[in-house]
Amino acid sequence: MTTDLRERTREAQAVGEAGDAAAARDLFAGLVRDCTRALGSDDPETLRARDWHAYFTAEAGDPAVGVDLYAGLVRDRARVQGPHHPDTLHAQNQHARYTGTAGDAAAARDLYADLVRDRTRVLGPDHPDTLHTRNQHARYTGAAR
Image: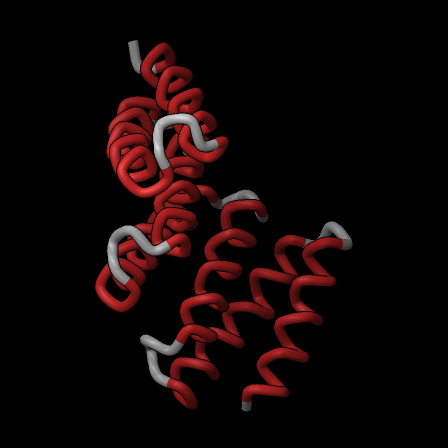
């Protein structure tokens, strides 16, 4: 399964990079299903496939569903890998990003506020990822007014 996961992952990513987010979304949906069945829901490969599935779902024009997928992924990554693991912080960032894209500026502001706190604690106040998150927080603070 691992070699076939990796080949299927590369194929789905290539489809997405070629500009067909909907097809990549569908490929990753199948990959999530198969990884969950073969490896379990907490396996790193399953979590990675879920991340890509959420990303391509949002990019295919359904950011609200991407938000829901990322909310579950944040919860599961925090439980499995810890709340300050880089993959958990990445999923938090994507959750906030697509919340804003879906049109909920106030919720995006609040999610980015939490992420600023977490990235400052883990990476420091001057890390590029922290600075980016602070910028996004300011952006959505202004948009939520």
